[in-house]
Image (cartoon, rainbow, N blue to C red; front, side):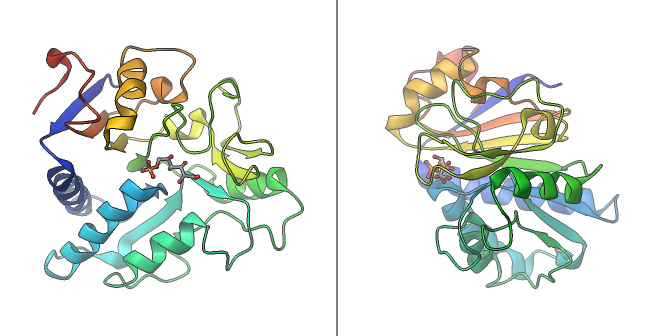
Length: 242
Ligand SMILES: O=C(O)[C@H](O)[C@@H](O)[C@H](O)[C@H](O)COP(=O)(O)O
């Protein structure tokens, strides 16, 4: 397990640019040595901005999009065509420049066709099997949640890979989430966080507050927190690298 490192950026634009470029560079580096790369995506406003920038980088990058597999860290348990679905938003951005077949994209199940979030989570865990994410992306909620693992409901002893959430404190209440078990077996875990309202929870999580799910995420090789200056504003200077 790797200790968290903080990459502090002067502003949101710099964070978006660096996060998108770092993702591209890492995927290209991986493709030089391995056939398939598994990337686990997150929802949220910050991530969507970074995906926009990433999609712009794709055409001139040399990225082999055929060799990329996309997974999701969590999903809102709503119908397939509901615009609230993380997968729908993310794919609508990425599909501008990435040609992706359905065999490469592994969205979490939607509510049409599945009885409840638990059944959907079970199916997703089965699909995931022994897959290890090369990069697992996460956003951070103001309450310290990551994926759909909320404070006070942390299923940290779960040996399963995905869980159904029926009473999330944030709408919609029904969700599917990867567990810490699935997240923390990733090679790299990257958190993308911006804005002043996240500063207190960033400081608590990086101080190791055990109540916060975000304090428990670790990649096997790398745990990187990409922050803008506002989100990093309550951290001690020594914790920031840039
Ligand atoms: O599933 C959801 O309801 C949200 O998308 C949420 O979990 C989000 O990922 C985080 O709150 C961080 O997102 P922001 O980058 O939008 O702050």
